[in-house]
Image 1: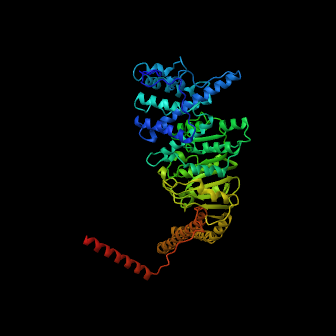
Image 2 (image 1 turned 30 degrees about the vertical axis):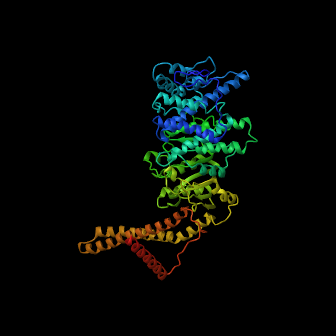
Image 3 (image 1 turned 90 degrees about the vertical axis):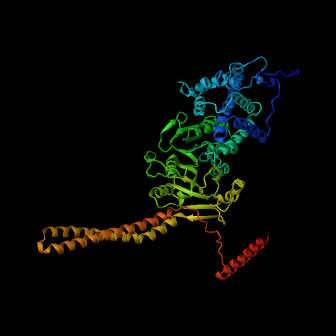
Length: 599
């Protein structure tokens, strides 16, 4: 063996004193993470839905260990005591840190396990580490951080990677993604890489698209709503936590020069709130928010619509209403009766119920930005859709609707046409400003970007008019509809009055039939039949008139963006010209076929 570098039992060179490579650029961090994913893919984690959850808890525990070590050193420097969330041998430095990274003369649990029987490390993780981490939240004096740890680990039953050797290789690479190799200024870089992993989960075919909103859409929505210091932010269907993470980033960057220690503590501890139903996604959302710098992710695990919780320990001090709501609730889903029980307007449509939940969760004066599918905007043929939108426009000022291009969610496997709605609770809607982005062609290689929103932002403050923007006077639309519906309402009232009169006449004729002599029965039966027919006809005509009046009034709540400035392309060619074109093309085809036959 060559002198200078001693080999370990695993065959790796001892690098205790080697200086680790620093990741100084985003690209460098990206590559390091994708290298880890390559190892995981060869280790039986074939797709993103497998390797992202696995990498999630490993990255989290690595970052947590670095965080607690720094906090312990800071406390020691000022003479204060410090109680970590994890004690030996359950810290990353004990079981995950490569032994050759330890100071000279020190060893750790991993080294002991590597030198023991085959698969000793897997046995330790499965029988001791995972059970310990999962039950931290049950301790009588469990801290918020310990509850977060337990919830992030809640979905981890076993290690997904196939062999201990592959797992150790992953641990070695993960260890290089924190601490002195990626300092605090680069944690943001790490969070961006993690978002790249989440994007992989959201791609079509990975079955994670329902939890993922394109980041450019999130950024645009956050910029429009502009969360302020001191405001609470809530997402009732937070998925992987994109809206909450972006809101934190926006606020810390916007107010960076005036942030006090108390401001930062409030942002990291008591500002961001969310709910998520899916067992796989909930821990990923927690880890994502921690990686973005939110120390306490106040997430509720359970079904937002039914109110049934799996775990609510991080949501205990949630306010009843919130200053800001940003969300992309599920659309196209069907809910059972248990999910509809608590709502005023019953519907199996998931998005209708979520909109009702959002309206009741937004405080007076609060602002909301929400992604809604086209169907909810234009449908007026179901009472729950109309009533929910009537409630929205009656309680809130819907000041902006953006029509997104088709295909924005295609990468996530959802081809539904979508819109962005922005509103403030407290005053009814008077006018709605629309902006049309639907003409942009979006594809996998040409995604929607923030540049596509530049003209929108330039016009937003004054609700300017352009080829892509226009204003709808909602009050005037209601006034016109009320006027148009009035004749039908009057007709319905008149028909009901006549039906009531004939109903009284029917009673009289029924009594007359009962008292009639045998010779009068036939005539009395005919008279009663006439009255009954009249009542039915008048009631039917009243219903038709009422339905027509309702249809006119309900049509007001068709909020679909129809651009009045869009130039219609009209084919002005005459039938004769079209026939001549067809004949010319036919001749070309005939000549081409003749040439082919000669070959």
